[in-house]
Image (tube, rainbow, N blue to C red; front, side, top):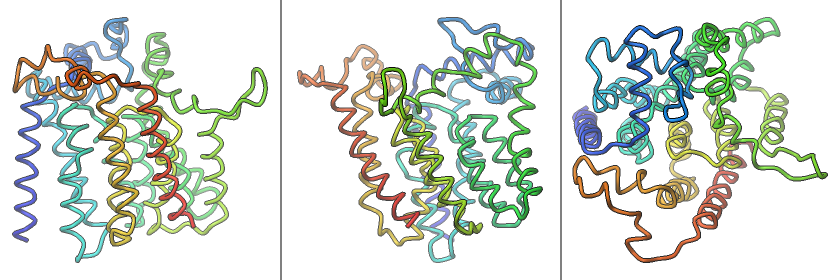
Length: 368
């Protein structure tokens, strides 16, 4: 028990330090969206979207930050600290999914994994919230509370669309066609209810409902004619669904069936750095349940992700520490400082290929 408290206190201290010493400009747009809501512009929120300020997320996250503004005032650093409740609870839920001998290891891996720390407390992105609800849905399914599992997965979808890929693995736990149909309705209900008030807004439809980020998984393709291509991610996700339809799905294996479609998404998508947190809890479970047998491919995934950060704008690396060292605001990227010419597109392609190889291996091991 003493080790748990040491890990918790050190982990919280690290999170506080990173929250106060780093800042990414994208957090400002989230803050303004929340301010519009707290100022009473709830139903016309997306009318404030402009070329300079694009409100491109589902409304639930802006409601969340609007409530935070009403209760505690508008502060970028407070916004990052508000993620603590989701982050720490997620870590505790992960310990509930493993046996007693592995609880400390699991909690440690979550509390000190670089992806969560970077995405949540350095970038300040809210991907920890839908990730929390995805993991919570597994815990509820294990407790035979499928209706609640579907609803909380639906809340995750209402924050960010990606958990929609997890609906089919979850509903396969339902017994009978009618139960499965109800689970589909439960998972879609929170999203539909939250976006319905905005569906008449053209700004919402163009910037949030059909945002550019949603189509990034459709870029990877194989041309079959002058105007026709096979889209790789939809092809492989459909194949994955057919494969699990032919198997007996049990709740103990649900985390594996969440892991595979998310890895497929990252294999075929030019993804934003913070998105990798979606799959991080399931990679940790993979490490723990398999007694670190897959440590090499997972380590390769983490390393390729970290290296890829240096082939984007410096706001994702050195400039994030400008609150601590103001001179970094004017500092160019690391390659300019080193006077080293880099082909960014080739470097990112190489790292993505390495990432894909390791991810395909993990999918193969899990589905075998």
